[in-house]
Image 1 (cartoon, one colour):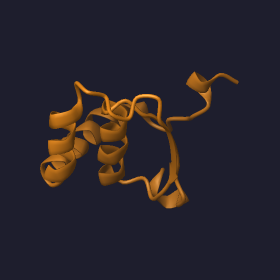
Image 2: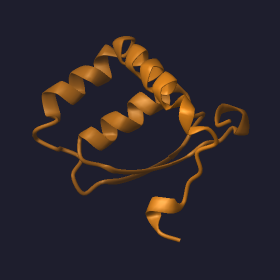
Image 3: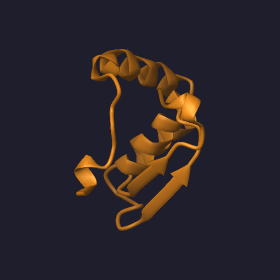
Image 4: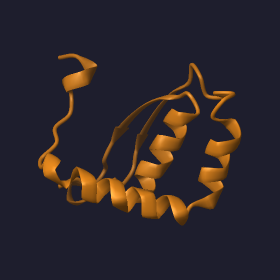
Length: 85
């Protein structure tokens, strides 16, 4: 199994809805968005490998996308089956 196929998406047709929810959450998380804007070019987390386990919410998605935008390699596992349906 490669790293590219070690996940499953139950309903890919929900992608657009999910992306819109993430955009809304970004507006509610100005601290993370400011970090992204300030440090994206510097890539301060380049080479960092971060793993986490937390409820998979739109806020968690914003955190993960911020870590990735700052250069980290991120792997995530949801700790609640009901937040990943």
